[in-house]
Length: 118
Figure (cartoon, rainbow, N blue to C red):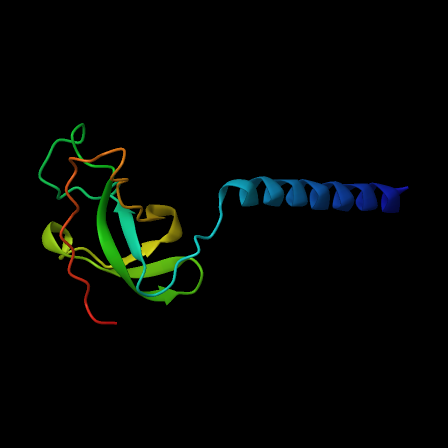
């Protein structure tokens, strides 16, 4: 009888773990980025940007990916106001940079960008 209870408990724990893993993997995808790609970095944890939180941009950039640290962290080349920040960011704080569509936003000027040699 005790063996059946242990088996059922172990089976239930494994099922719960598999279900939680599937739910986590639905919303946490590793971005397909490589060295030299342009990315934007979340300003969620930046408290040195000189504007009120209400007016602060959600993302700063674009920045160039300098190196990869496994699948979960990227090192970027920070410029301007963010030069003094640590350049390594987790995947959750990085998005791929998508330039503005000229047809939808004809008056928007592109951001001047200097790409360091890789």
